[in-house]
Every structure is written in structure tokens, then in C-alpha cells.
Amino acid sequence: MENIHIFAFTHRQLEVNQIGWLHIAPDNQKDRLKTLKSQFGLNELMFLSTCNRVEFVFHTSKAMDDKQIGEFLAELYPEFTEDSIELFTSNVEHYQGEEAVEHLIKVTSSIDSMIIGEREIITQVRKAFLLCKGFGITGDNIRLLIRHTVETAKKIYTETNIAQRPVSVVSLAYHTLKSKDVPLDARFLVVGAGVTNTNMSRFLRKHGFTNFAVFNRTLSKAELLAEQLKGNAFPLSELKNYDKGFDVLITCTGAENSIITEEIYSHLLQGEEHSKIAIDLAIPNDLDEAVVHKHVIDYISVDRLQKISSKNLKERAREIIHVEEIIDEAVLNYISLHKERQVELAMSEVPQKVKEIKSTALQHVFAKEIEGLDPQSKETMEKIIDYLEKKYISVPMKMAKEILLKK
Image 1 (cartoon, rainbow, N blue to C red):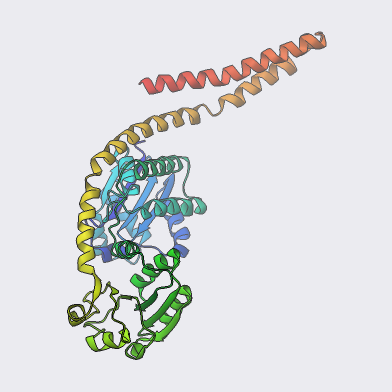
Image 2: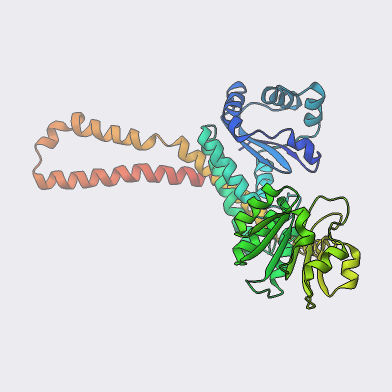
């Protein structure tokens, strides 16, 4: 198990944009990773890349120190300067053996993430393994490790409340809206077609809302999002002229100042006086303060959502003690699994050897004696030999496992 290593470059030691330098486009991963594996004589290799971490999981009997790490990076990233290599070499987290197993389980169960309890990481780990398996650079050791890691992460998400309370702004915005029993035919105004509103729209579409008008500075992006929502697209410049009314306003643009003034908001109301819902996910806010003060409005701002997020994060943090208990048990279980697997591999030739001995005995050593037996005796003899063959395979395997596990 000491041959398992992990080089981790994470948000704890590096800025997110610096971690971005280590990302490798999926189309380029196969050739570069296979070359790295061959160049360093690694037995197995897996590459994990997310928005806030890049990790290399590998199996090798060779020693790995700071010098090896620098050579490792220079081979994989030939465009790096000496300063860049020094930056990453001095900020790498190197795990080996039992510590590597524990680290990977913590990563996959999200307690090592920027946002504790976000389940997306378990999918990212599984996909990373399957991709590298497809490249032909993983093997039995990493397969066993990933299987056990994913099973443990699933157990953690099932048996603890680590992922129960949403903490992302978009998820919180959706859950807040959902709690207000908005009818499915409510009129939605979506201002901005960037990543945030696109993610929010996925929730809305999944929930079954049907009435959308999308505004964006670049019309083509508004059209793309409107197509996904089966709604209508407009340039942002037409927002001040929109006269269809609305029930829910969702806005998130990159504007430096408020773009929905009191004048524009009053026009959008079209004389309707009942309370509206406004979800403002922009920083700074898209909705002018005068709108909130003057009109009857259920205003959901980023500030409000972040306060809920902080509270939920604290609730999730309380679960870490329970999670770590599961992880400690899982690491011990993996040690046993790893030992059992080593026995299985070491004794993998036993069944074939037993079959060869059996064949030699029947066809050569006792061939003449067997010819003299009557059919019933032959049948009985074959049953006895088959029984002994199975026992000679299973009993030594079981005994070897028991002896090794006791040690």
C-alpha cells in the first residue's frame, strides 16, 4: 500500500487561477499522461482536475521527493518556467500509503472541498477514473482504491447530514423560490444569460415552470438560454419597453451599476399592484435600492442568501466529526481489502497449477490404472478428484488471508 502516492495541488495552498495552469484539456490528456507514466516508470496513473484542485494519483515502487516532483511537473508541463515549477513544488501536498487513502476519501466525500457537502466531487472522481481507465493508464490498485473511496463517500452522504442544507447561492435561490409556492405558469423575467442564470434556469426548467422572457446584452446568448427554457429572447436594451408584465424577476449581469432603475421597474409592472418576487444574484446588485424601498416586493439578494449559506455551512461542519469516524473505519477496511487482494494476486497461479497436476496424474501417472476401472468407479474417482481440486484451491487461499490479516 506504500506504493500509492498522491500529488495534490489545492485551494489551501494555491490561488484558483494558479491551479488553472495545471488543467489539461480532455483531448490532450491521453498522450501527455501516457508519456508521463512511461517516462517515470509508473505502474498506474490517474489525473483528477476540478475548479479548485488538480491531483495525480499513482502507483510506483520508486521513491518520490521534491526533486522527483519538479521533474514530474517539467515533463508534463514543458511550457512552465523554473519559477512556475518552484511555485508548485513548494506548494504540493504529497500523500503516501495510508495517508493517501484517507486523503482521497476526504476529497470524494467533500470535507476537503472549498464547499463542504457538495456532492458533485464524487461524480468528478468517478469520471476521472473512467477516463484514465479508457486511456489504459490505471490498473488493479487504483481500481480497488476508487471503488472503495466512492462506496465510502456514498455511505457518508447517506448516513450523515453533510449535504443536507444547500450552500451555493444558486441552489439557495431556487430553494427559497420553491418555498413560496409560485404557480408553474408564473411569468418569469430573466435578465442576463451568463453561467449563474443558466444554472438557475436548469432548476426552474426541471421544476416545470413554462413562461420565460430572457434579456441579455448579447442577443445570441439570450436566444440560447431562451431556447433551453422554451421562452422568448430580447436584447437588454428592450427591457425598458417590455409590456407583458411579470411575477418573478431573476437578474444577474456583470454591470458595474444597477441596470433596473425605479423607472424601468415601474414600467415592467404595467400597473399591477400585487407583490412581486425579485431574485438579484448580481454583485453589485442589478436592482436599484429605490425599487426595493418604493414597491411591494419580496426581494431575495445575494447578501440575504450568503447569510443563509454561512449558517448552513456551520450546520454541515458539525457533521464532520461523524464523517471522520466513517473515514477512519473505511481506511482500516481498505488496509484489509488491500492485503486480501495481494494474497489473491500472489496465489492467482494456484488454480492453474492444480489443474496441471490433475491433468498429469490422469493422463500419464495413473493412466493405465484408470483404464482398468469400471464406469462407476471412474465416476466416483472423478468426483473425488474434483472435490479435492476445489479444496486445494480454496483452503490455501483462505488460510493465507487469515495469516496475513492476523499479522
